[in-house]
Image 1: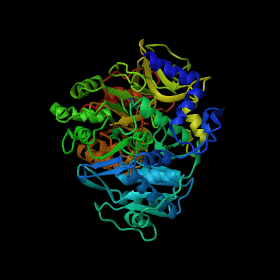
Image 2: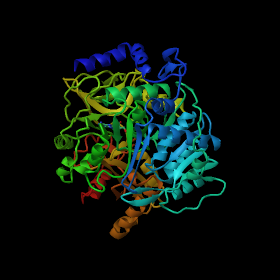
Image 3: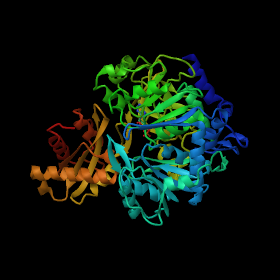
Image 4: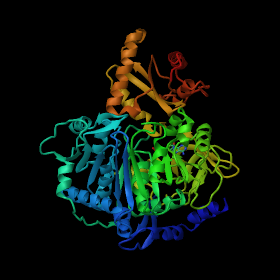
Length: 633
Ligand code: AMP
């Protein structure tokens, strides 16, 4: 791994030279005057004074070179449709949508909230926004009205773009009622809603507010909408993610740094070149969808496959069928998807011609050895586990086949990626730890191009949240435990905070608790993440009822449990629905009133609850034990 090490060292020790070279990957309308302004740590401004545009670099530039090559391949096994958009087609769509947005009064710096299923229009709208300098904020389609309303109020968008419905397992999932509910409850509803009518679920349009996408699109066919050249640090988008509080954080991304970082990662991390075909099975509502369904592949001149559907429908060979059909070179998915496939016939992996496929990339949650071995043997392709976060925008740890081919170790996302000065530090002293020592994975700032520039509207929260975890040192905390071994391979060992990961979806336990507590029968609650063989983790809630009498009645308790789960699903979305909600008389707390979550998790996972010297009421822990006796989740 000599080359990877040297490459990484160069990116840290000769930071500006390194990133000046990489900046040549994109088109600059006006050159930058400085590679990095780090005069106000930890805020990093990359490519100061440079003017560029994400849409121009992802769409126009490539349409000029080879207009007939495919750019976006949309496949839906939900509604059984496919569409291939060439580079020229994509330019045409994006220009038309940009003109539509302008016509609806959207301009530079305005926010546009996108609440859409995995349809090609979602990519068009994202690209159209950045074309005109509007800031998009995509909210995962699986989120429900409360989450949506919170994000609308924080972003205060001028426009919301949505659809009648998504689809899951062939069944339509209505979006419009959730949106209407959210808009009715939020303080800053936008004046206009642009609606894609897929003809899946009938709905009533709100007169004067709701605008039909197709009608407007027809009116703007052939429009040419000029590019807004943004200063490199001007925001491209805000993407909300969960943390330790109930309030989601709007991760703000810049423009120039993101373009350079993604284009470089497509080459070094994903081994891609212009003309290749790339597929990520994520959703546009997550960071992987932003970076590796929409922007990354397109910025590098690669075609991207956007997939609406499950990896198991119509059967477990669908991903590989698409690889064969579209000659896909790299697939990016999550360990959960592979664990689901593992339950099916391994012969499904061999049914299609996979000769175009160079590697399978997996991220979003820990990749266990068994799953890694199974898929590696089944496909006969390299499996590349990469570790990163919404905040970083692109991988922090990964094998980097575009730099050097090095053997991987299952269970490890390999090595630090160039640009990230990653350390393992002591939780208490903040000192760097050596090989084999478990600590917190941290990054010595400045964060590289493409990483978050701040929290939307709250610089102070950005600094306080991410850079004040360690005494005497300003380090970015990933809030993940980790270590590296003697050979330099890194391992991620779970979160240090109250964030959980359900099937690759990041959720804050506090958000779920807030929804649980909104149920009128609940006095207080604790939600924890418990290990699950399929989903990685599942949420399990423990609730103290206002009227403990309900506890004695099994039938009543079951009804209440289902009712609480329904409330959570309606407020946050099905992803947050706890596997179980248990009822207890009290929660185990420390004398200072903090819930002993780690002890609860340990009990749920059949482990020793650990140090209990600070517990206020040991009886409460006994009640937890008692409540999980039936052992289901
Ligand atoms: P998100 O911001 O939703 O992408 O979630 C980021 C979190 O997912 C990280 O902080 C980790 O806890 C977890 N994660 C992401 N990728 C990996 C990986 N390859 N191995 C282990 N954990 C991961």
